[in-house]
Amino acid sequence: MGIGSLLAGVSTIFNPLTAIGLVIMIVLTSMAFNTMMFLLMVRVEDPLVPRAMFGILNTLLFFPSGSVYPIQAFPRWLQAIAVVDPFTFAVHGFKSLLLKETGLIAVWQDMAYLSVFAIVALAIAVPLFKRTL
Image (cartoon, rainbow, N blue to C red; front, side, top):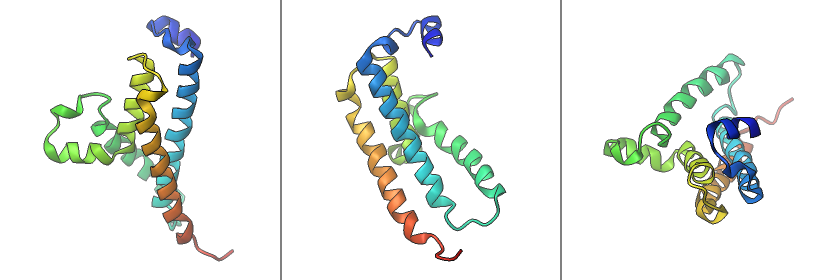
């Protein structure tokens, strides 16, 4: 990560507060996506379905996240999807910390959304588990 940052000219990674923010964003992003998949796959029996479903969802949720094109350029219906897409908040948080050299205060809303998303998805998924061995 350090060598890649030096090659890309991103020096913000060496700021300790930015590094802490990145670790928090990585943990919250992975929790949000894992709990989302957890919720979607809670009753699936076939082991191939989660892999295929994650590939499709990864592609469908990545495009409206604002990572490739600005969200403001999207049609209204795609902007509505981007508003609830957890990828949007992850991308905004990572862009803010790495490229815009902001602090944790600038990404607290992204962190809060990812946290709430993970908690809600987990709270819905846990009761849906089968209670058999």
